Length: 378
Image (cartoon, rainbow, N blue to C red; front, top):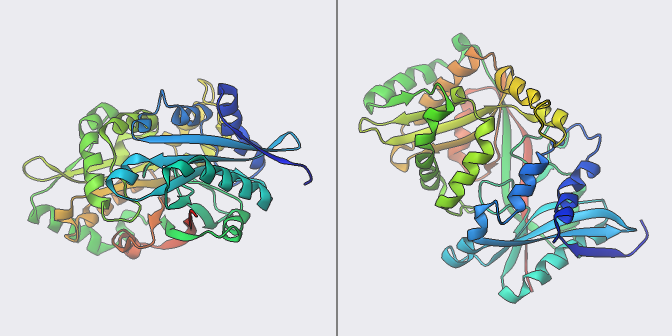
């Protein structure tokens, strides 16, 4: 593809719309890419609507060649990560590109040059502003349908970065788990669940509506911090970010799919969030959520034989005490009741063996791998 490459900063509202919609062209007719809701993406990038900008700054860029958009990228600094965790990291995300190594080279160099004055040590991506944004370049599983909480990309992305001197920073794995009928489900999980509930005097909370869940959300985020603060990618979630994520995801939550466990004092000690799979619904919506096409989301919420495992949190005091058996027993009952046949995990760090042990009692398949890539900034 001949022509000079131009890198243009995203500044005007119309630039942001071009930035957000570029993947719709890049992945047109791709059966595995799941498009985001365009307005949600615009709101995420907007400093007036996303409170993450209280502790982060970002600049986004578009690549043009022959007057056509051929790539995009975001340069991000999370100041909590830099100042409090002492990680002098430049993040890059929202990275999409045609199969042209020179376009990728120009985009990466632009990101590094833009924040060069901050004297950061290395660049890593693709990641978002925080742990709750999509992260990790897909390296295996290109013929598996993506999910609403994961990135999809063409196979050449990784080779572009490796050619430019990047190496793997962190690896993630994802599993697809088949759900048995209750009678065929692992007997030891059922027995162990009741034993742990009785031993530690725990109670399972079941919710009837979204309103009942809201009082526990702040505690869930606090528990996330406790659960994952030893992992290499961890950055503390700030209180002002919680409301943003509540608003962003509340429409996708069904109360049946939220399970909380409290101790005898009423303290939240564990929770899990699963969601019906929205991938096919989002493919039908094609990025535009209207009153008419929202019917696809409603159908996916109530009539679905597939689910996605989103988040799990367990207080460190109760880790390795069998709490996961309770969570899985409850999920088993829920999935059987709603006729769900399979569940897909969210990306789990390859080093997070404690989470991966959860699947050993079930028929499962490692169907996707992803990684972030890093390079020292000279």
